[in-house]
Length: 350
Image (cartoon, rainbow, N blue to C red; front, side, top):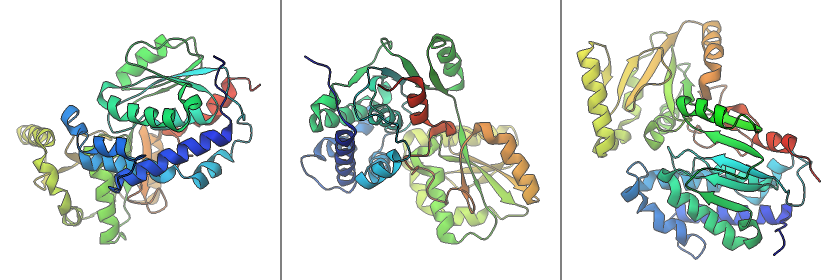
């Protein structure tokens, strides 16, 4: 059998079809393309309690909303050097599993740029990622033959993209030291408020904070507030998220963090489902949201610059719009490292 050769047009068609199926599934529209995702929405929670139906729908809606033919063409139009044929190179991808389909963008970048994919998928996100690759294989069997998934050790790759914690990143850097690589570490996201936000904007911010239980690197975990800002205004806009208290694992984290702060006599605001505390850290535990005050724009600028290497996303007026933290565009890359440019530079295009 000859090696598959899938031109750029076929790649666009396959991924736009995937986007349509994802959007339909997220909206509850049942048809043959969406059926594999619809079946998973209500069952993934059985194997991973964090993958609730709401969170799976959110991921499908966010990703599917970007996978339109127009957006794919707009994105790829920025890279005229992307080849029209399939390359001989294989990219190894080590995927995280903290939120549904967190490794999808790497999969997309590798395949859409004409490379072959060899992915080590997370056991936490195996079923959903296999549904995606299964759909691609049916939509375009030749493109499907460019995909290899493994639960074990990666091998047979020419470059690698690996995502993990600060601890695992040190292992990745050592293990993959002989290959061109992108190694990603823990990052957090923050919101900047200036006091002029409407209640509707603050409700949107609540979505950025509570989406995926705060487990994503684009989940807002730190607020920069103007001096004397009344944090109770936030809690009055976030009452719909009280439902998280009914999630057993989230409630355990909430109770644990509350007990620790009481024992340590640390001041906090308790909403019954979220603990807000003034703290400089960007990485509070689950069910805790940190905040700090700034006295001037210059002070805020210095603090953001100091934290820049640890920030994935900043929302607010003048930044990513509130409510859009979990909806990055195709051309918004993790850690601000352009994955497509990395792939194009590392391989000769023949």
